[in-house]
Structure formats: C-alpha cells, structure tokens
Length: 348
Image 1 (spheres, helix red, strand yellow):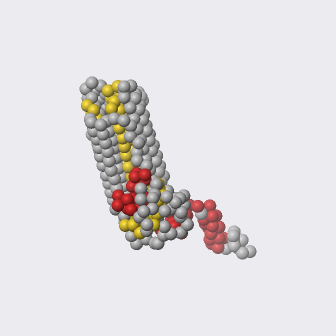
Image 2 (cartoon, one colour):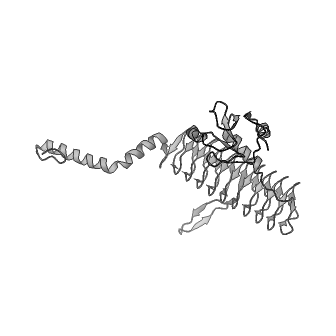
Image 3 (cartoon, rainbow, N blue to C red):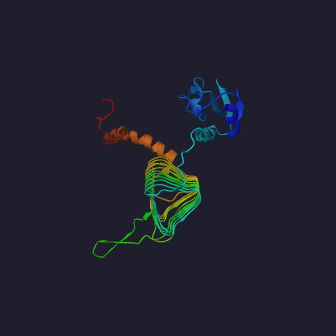
C-alpha cells in the first residue's frame, strides 16, 4: 500500500511523499527501502539518521528523519497496528472438521472453525467466529465466547467460562484441579475436591503452557484485558485484575487478589492469601510475601521498595570488603582500649 493509504488507515499525519509504496515493517536497524519502522524510545535517536526505511513512525513533537514521517501520539502502537495490516493472521476455513468429535448437545455458533481431533463435550457452547485449532479439548458445560482463538493442545475443563476475543496459546490449561489437600491423622493426605468456577473475561490473552486452576469453592477469575505470558501458574481462588501484565514464569499462590493494571516481570512469585494493590509493579524475580499498597514499585526477595532493594544490592556486593574493614576497626578499637601499640591494619 502507499504511505498515504497507511497514514489514513492508522490516523497518522504524513510528512513526505504519500505515493511511496511500502510492503512491510522492521526495526530501525533492519529496515530496508519499502519498509516502515518506528522510534518510540529517545535513547535510540542516534540510530534514526542511519535507517534505510522508507518511512518512520514518530511522535508529533519528535525529531526530523531522513525519510518520510508518520506523526502519531504513540509510535509503538501505530507500528503494532501496521504489523497487523501487513501480516494479517491466517484463519482456517469455517466448519467442523470430519475428524473432530462434537457432542450432540453442544452448541456451536456461526462461522466457527473446529479443527481435527478436537473434542467438545456435552452442553458446551462455542460463540460466533471462534477458531479452535487441532487437538483441543473442551469439557462438558464449558462456555466459550465469540471471536476467540484457541490454539492446539489447549485443555478447557468442565464448566470453565471464557469471554469474547480471548486468545489461548498452545498448551494452556484452564480449570485443572487446584492444589488442595488435608493431612489425615496417619500423615497421609486427603484431596479436597476442586469443583468451583474458573472465569476468563473478555480480551484476555494467555501464553503457551500457562495454567489457571479451579478452586474448591468460590472462583478463579482473570479480568478483562489481562495479558499473561508463557509458563505462568495461576493457583486456585486467585483474582487477576483488569489489564494486568505478567511476564513468563510468574507464579501466583492460592486465594491472592491482584489489582488492576499490575505489572510483574519474569519469574515473580507471589504468596497466598495476599492483596496486591492496583498499579503495583514488581521487577523480575521479585518474591512478594506480604500484601502491598496500590502503586508500589517492588524488587528483591522478600520484595521491598525497588529503590531500597537496589541500594541494598549495591551494598551486598561489597559485603566481604565491608566485613574486613569492620573487623580491622574492631581490632583497632580493642587495641586502643587496652593500650596496645600493635594495631592491626594501622601504622607501626
């Protein structure tokens, strides 16, 4: 498409030749003529002068460029939308594949695609426009909304509720049993039946091999707009707030409530029965062991204010040196107290 067409479709203000043809997108350093790139982070300004792209997405008040410019409030967002324009998602043909097994009592909406080796249980419902790729299992009574994308090897257990426009990447498990056991008098363990609800609200995306467990009572709920990465464990009875972001290998223990707009870096761990306030940010590998107030910025284990944690980390690297100095000072004080002239570490 031409730059003029691209600018119109994305609501950008064009500076330059609108007749230039563009066919794809790329990063600043990799872009070639015929491609569009973007600059959102000021620290990459120096790379702008050397780009070979035909056009670049820049902020309204951003710098000049050696190519055509598409001015926009959010260059990264515009770039993301351009990716979708140039590489639209492939969609399989609608209909139920002859090698799928769909229960007679299941309800399948219009324009649904169900691939081979999919199993859909009794009373399950699948909304209009949803795509179910091969080898997916949808349990009895499960409800799936409209325009969802369910990739291969996903397991949606009985009575799980999934909203509209949800994306489940390969290997997601919804509604597996929560980890609940009671110790018997003889030391063995009795399983607590995990039979309550799992609800995934609209516009949620769950990464590959992420698991969301079912509780014994109450519900596990992921609220609208949350985006969760690969290999994340959401335990039974957890609530994840709206628009939360969680990177890979995050683990949330049971009955914890995560507020709206929370952001967790990779490998963050959160204890059970906690409340994490709205807008909290935890950097990668933080371990949260206590409830935290809204807007907290956390790091380390146990997680504390990230600025204090960074200062403490800097001191930690110097502990051997500081220990040696303290021992020398203690010896000097002891020598002065006893009147000894032989002071370790001092002049003799």
